[in-house]
Amino acid sequence: MTFLIILSGIIAPAIFWICYFYYKDRFQPEPIRNLGISYLLGIATAFACIKFYGLLPFVGLPDDLSALMNSHRIQFLLYSLGVTGVVEEFFKLLPFLFIITRFKAFDEKIDGIIYASMIALGFASFENISYLAYMDGLELVGRAFASPLTHTIFSSIWGYAIGVARIYKKSILIASLWSILLAAFIHGIFNFFTTSPALRLLSALVILLIWIWRIRILERGQTSNLDI
Image (cartoon, rainbow, N blue to C red):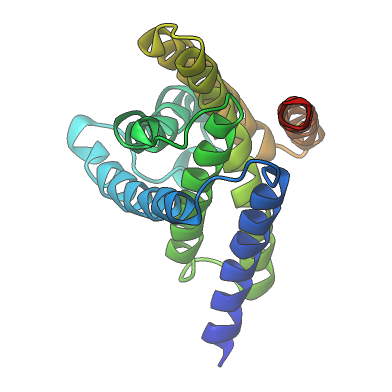
């Protein structure tokens, strides 16, 4: 019963965020089928990402950050920036580039945010389930709410950049390169900040600022739909 309660606590936040993003795109909503595919792709990429982390020791890199968090802070920072942020954003980006951008319904700039968010939610859901054996109930439920939020925020950066490039017929490759580097950098910095009590407030500030930007972009997109 406890396992089911905890699992429900992980799934419920994901459902909440899915409903939230669907509501934000309510004036010209994406097909539910497309959103479901995006979510499942996020789950698949999270599985692939975890398997990839398992290969890192073969090239001399740790697959577990816990050994670096407290004893090697500089190495942990470099790992967060050069490995964690880059790897996770890259894996989320792959299905977006090769599958999502082919959707005919992808016809607005903000659609990039919506689809990227769905991939991120699937990614975070699988990631949270993988932590079931390592965290207690309250800690896990707290992560279940925070992880989908942060992952969608990071993914929104490259999702919107690629959405803009796609709609305005610009180079998707260039948009992908600069935006994933930015998202990976912010992702890595956020991970580093959250492990330091002195810097934890800064991590919350980073998320808040990007969230405000994200809301403004979505609201501006919805306003333009109403004007059509």
